[in-house]
Length: 132
Image (cartoon, rainbow, N blue to C red; front, side, top):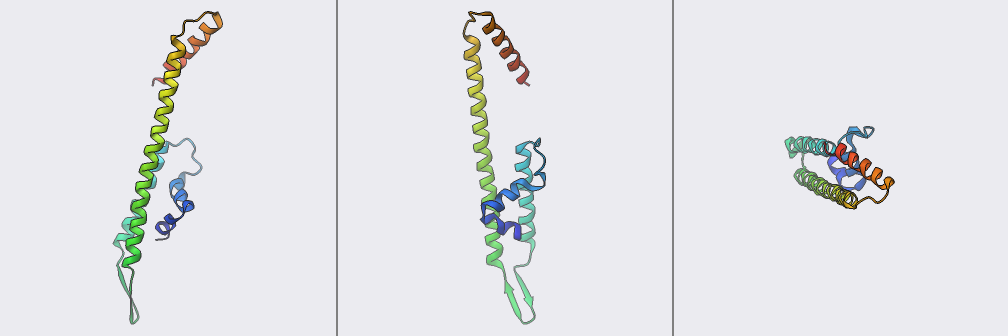
């Protein structure tokens, strides 16, 4: 419940995204997003499975409104994660496309000096190494 209610703040959202992998810089960002979504789904399922009403002595506590709002926070945040992932992926792909376009233009220009030819050769080998 606390995890879902923390989604109302940016700090809480960042905490969920970081998760347990805060120290692992080598981890694939897509995997990190996937784990955050899975963690959120687990928490949301726990909240969904809780009873809406709980009797305490002679009072019956109705938590249906809280339960629904927490599930709504979780669902909204999952959609935000997907939107952020799409935006980040588009930016990365555009950067890669720009890099390839610049490299192609650089390699298309005929070298007039030996140094330029060496630079183009190194650039060509870098591109070949990045193809995988």
